[in-house]
Length: 261
Image (cartoon, rainbow, N blue to C red; front, top):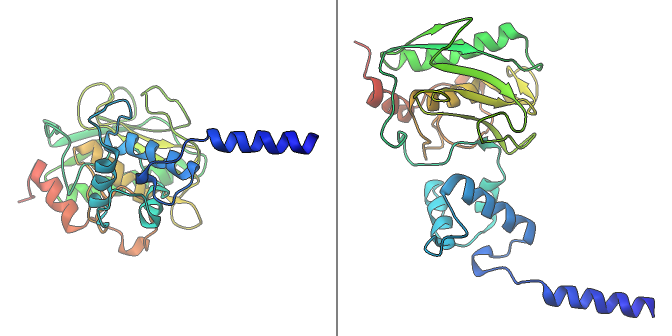
């Protein structure tokens, strides 16, 4: 009797389960849920809007990452979705934020408000300076560190909800995010303190790679669809000796701030 009731309940549950839409392809419920959340976060997908076509959003993402534009989730698309990445939505090429916000002065101040326990403070200071130096060498910008008071760019490490309506999600997933130049949160760069940050000498997320990317956002750059660009949205390990701005990154920063003479 017990097993008969259990079988009936199991059969009823499976009958009540809604089939996944065609766009889900061969993905399971968990993968489909993750994909929908990804499209909401990075491609402005709104499940409540009737005119917001899910197939079109999948195609938009596939186009950005250079994948065949099928509008259906597949292994290659899910592989991108599951990679650790920046929390800023994707835009395209070396694009700038809407309205092209930029700092009015070519001397930009920054301050590090908080640190990770994974690295000595002096190492974090050095890597932030190194990241900013890359952007400076490619443009007319110079950077000045301040130790107290306000600054154009405020840098810090945080966990979960941290006061900007963009909570971090723990280890993996979203590594960091930054805001375009502007007042209040404008220009600020936040790094998820649940990640394992490294200077490249051990396993973990290379802080220099992430900092250079996020500070690009702090200067006004959006994401690039060029896999070789620092401003590419997903994180992947590169040889630190070969790390630097790509031609795409350089074109982007010079479009905003010009070339050094």
